[in-house]
Amino acid sequence: MNEIYELLPESMLNCVVNGRELRVVRISDSELTIRMTKEHSDSIIKYSGDNTSPLFVIINIYDYYAGRYDSIIVKKTSYKSICHRKYYDEVTLEYLDEDNIIDTKLTAAVNHYWRYIMLKSEDYDNTFSKYMCNYPEDKDYEYPEDFVSQREKICAGYDFNKVFNNIESEIDKKKYAIKISNYLLYDSFLTMNIKDYIVKYFKDAGVSLTKDNYNKINGVYIGNSFCPNLFPDDDMLIKMINKAHDNNLDITVECSYMRQDDIDRYIKLFDKLITWCNENSVYIRIVVNDYGMLYMLNDDRYREYFIISLGVLINKYRKDPRMKYKNRLTDKDMYNVKNAMSNEDYLNLMREYKVSECEYESNPIRYDMPLKMALTIPFYQTNTSGNCPLYAKLVNGERGRQKAVINCGRLCEKKVFLYPLHLNMVGRYNSIFAFNENVIDDVEYYRYYNFYKDYDSDKNCITKDCIAKNCITNDYITKDYITKECSGINMSEDKREADSNRISRIVFDFL
Image 1: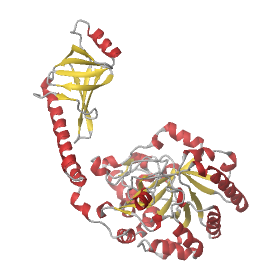
Image 2: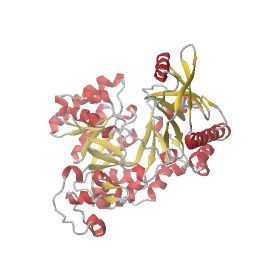
Image 3: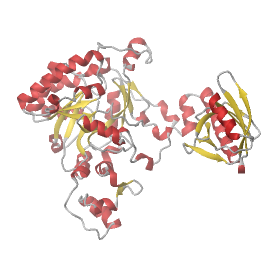
Image 4: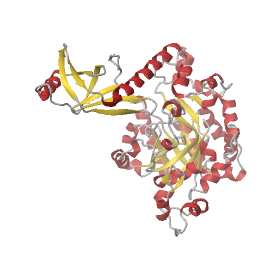
């Protein structure tokens, strides 16, 4: 290392001295200068004593292509000098780079960082992404004409009847629902015959089902998880749940985040729903997307009538369709990914608040799922803004000029943000959504979620241990996997209810 590097980003280079992570100010082939508080620098000098005592130093260098830090233990390190600044000290250490490991890795990191700066300053964003992570930059210039034609083109390319076939080969208790999430859908739901409405709901998205599969829709989601302005008024909501109840549909009320001004409204609304549930002797599922609402519903009078499901704004997980480019994920990285629900303390807290189910959306990355879930297909939300960027763009001219709006005029009924065709994304309401094609054709997708604790992502199948525990009796799995991998294992008709039926319902949402 002939150069002396100064003030490289901490995300690229840092070091740990005697167990404390410190900022690297300067590094050369034989010296390392670090920044620390005066108290810590005094302890380093005291520890070094006669300037020959060794220090325990680890240098961390980011490897971009591996997507991780390389930690190098520097075996021969000693204190050299100190420079006192006004608010901190800079301590210089001498070290020996055995086999030029630090030199090689740091040079590679600096070269990559220089390439990053040059691309960022001289090229367009998509060209930058092409060189940095093999992003298909040439496809970024193809846009759909509008959302309706984009949705029809996407959905018409798949046979959604396969969803019912795949689900029913993996799940014993089958429930299917449609999501009604804006005023255009609310109005048509109230005015049309329910069977005609369900057929129209799918056909408007370019989807055609068999008559039997249309008849299997036995639930409805009313409301919007993302925008509070799209939640129906109280009278409309009561009319909708009355119609759903009269047609023997399972009822779910989907709530967005709760603004301060909405607290009294929701208290009165939930009281109305309690009265309705009591009069009709039924339960209603409430999808909660706000911790304040979750706290509000933690009351005995609500627990008697409401089933609480954790919405996607609380049950967060990374699901951007560009993650495979950003993070260079392999197929194995897409399985058993953790989120907050994987944390036992968080899960116990949710159980204290009587959360019995979770809302998940179909996306390429497959997460741990400790509770029963509703799986929404085929679109999934990637991010949501508290203040609507679509309204800001249409009214203020810039999507960044956002502000809280109560009476927005529901401009999102006619306008959306369009994205390059290859991403299968759309900016709808105050959110961005993407389409997941795997959920339609891939039976393994549902098999994974039903048995994810025993799923072998390398073999793309259920493990031998899972079969030995008598949690699989499906003929397809028996013939396809048992014959090849697990011959001689005695299959039982017993089933583990908790493990084999994690998907409690499928929810269709075409936005």
